[in-house]
Amino acid sequence: MGLAVAFRLLGTLPSTNLITNIGFGEDATHTKRTDDQRINIPAVEMIFPLKHPPYMVRDRETDQLIVEQIGLRPEPKDLYHQIRRTCVDALPPPLRKSLASLRSTLLRREHNGSERSR
Image (cartoon, rainbow, N blue to C red):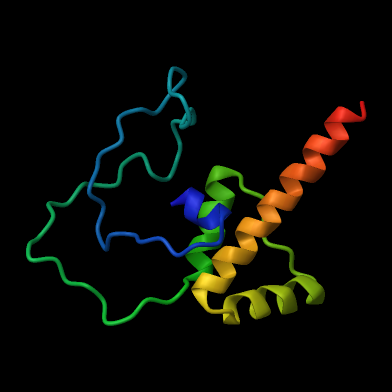
């Protein structure tokens, strides 16, 4: 889910908790705090058949919680970035994907060029 947020994609979250995380504490890889709010969430058995929602929308509050939990860079709140995000969201997905790919390529070239000049 964090990766979806990082790349501004839609991800899915189950309506109930499906796992029990036992990896909290000093020896844990990511969840070292034993007072983490996710420590005692009970797991619920998955019910079949699955019920799919009739549509999908972005849940900005949940996105923000994930950003805060996993330490991603928060979305800029200034007017320029809000307008830019609105324009990008309005593009058809294939065009958005092509532009994202082009941007990545250009940034990679720029990064590689700056490393060569060192």
